[in-house]
Image 1 (cartoon, rainbow, N blue to C red):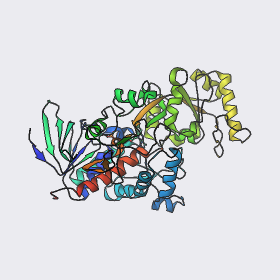
Image 2 (image 1 turned 135 degrees about the vertical axis):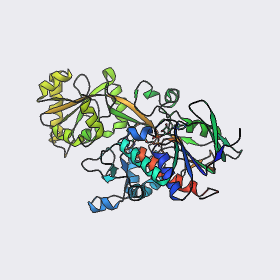
Image 3 (image 1 turned 30 degrees about the vertical axis):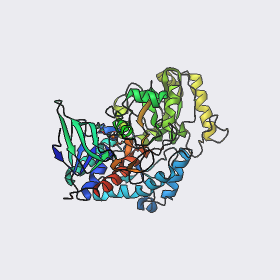
Image 4 (image 1 turned 90 degrees about the vertical axis):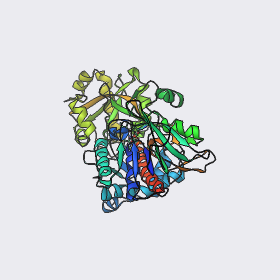
Length: 459
Ligand SMILES: Cc1cc2nc3c(=O)[nH]c(=O)nc-3n(C[C@H](O)[C@H](O)[C@H](O)COP(=O)(O)OP(=O)(O)OC[C@H]3O[C@@H](n4cnc5c(N)ncnc54)[C@H](O)[C@@H]3O)c2cc1C
């Protein structure tokens, strides 16, 4: 079959990575085509909170926040216990402020610096989000920007194969249409924005066995195609056991109850009314800890102050509407509503209060200092541990070029976001909030910019 068309830059996947790559290539004046398997560009990006970290920004400086790419990279190194590629982490941290400014000032994505809490492992406030703090809004803005920039997005186009030369140079991609027809498009450069393998149970069982039985709350279309194609080409891969989990998915509702409520003083108990972990260590590693409890569930416990904080998040408002949040005027009634043992729950509240007051050290090593003690009325949400997204993948350099096993770059192949090896170490506990979208947006932007330089026919 011969090429039916040739577009200088082809991008597989219309999530955050793909659309940022497309915008960057379009900025360079090069024609770009995005191929997306779904009928609407959403991906895991639309399921996310849409929070993107950036360090050393003017907004941080204006608010007196001390931060820099070096501080951010040090936070990544600490969270991953040194298991992330330090050069890639620093390179992404250095580019992060530019990504946020570029999205906001050049492409009209309304991003502002989020106030009110720190996610686990971040030593400075550096999260940027859209007004509704939702990935759905982020994706809508990116799609609008792509339309304004003249980016072509072809939906219902599932890429099935890459055509390449013996040296790994990509010549064309093949994709299937809903009627079963196969089409082929030639390209000068290819960007893989088709994410990781969390939507492929076989690959999850192979690389992340601890999450095989966990609820999957990510994008089902992410089947690991980038990994499969990369393997066939001889690409280097790393950290395939790394993932973003979440220890707070509302049980039976499938809505994430986000971690600010924990970081600002909330805690989790199991069905015996007892705490079982340092919840503030991180929400990703908390998924397996929750799933190790009886019934694979826990209750996140908080109060009206934290409820107010959480109302800024669309996910939380959805959880409220869905009836996933219980409230009670006192601990006894909270125990009755949640069917938790009243004495044990009261004892847990008392122990947490002692830690908040600095009277006793927390049994799990959590630092409760500086947080007000919880006060009636109380709130609770029943949660389970979920798999959101994988963090391992194809190794890339600081220009998002996919690397061979000998660490030389392929001639014209790029990857970002979930398709690429992330900066989250090798398991669940290295995931630092925001690093999914950092690698999606920044590697996407860098990939699109570098790919555009390979276009034979700039328009
Ligand atoms: C519930 C949830 C909350 C999250 N919250 C955050 C957060 O607040 N901050 C953060 O940084 N990260 C967060 N993440 C992680 C973040 O969403 C991902 O790291 C990021 O969106 C990955 O972007 P991507 O573009 O690589 O992948 P995606 O957004 O998943 O896009 C990949 C696209 O490729 C398409 N595709 C796949 N295979 C093919 C194929 N063969 N042909 C054509 N198209 C294909 C898919 O359909 C999909 O649309 C969250 C994830 C989840 C699930």
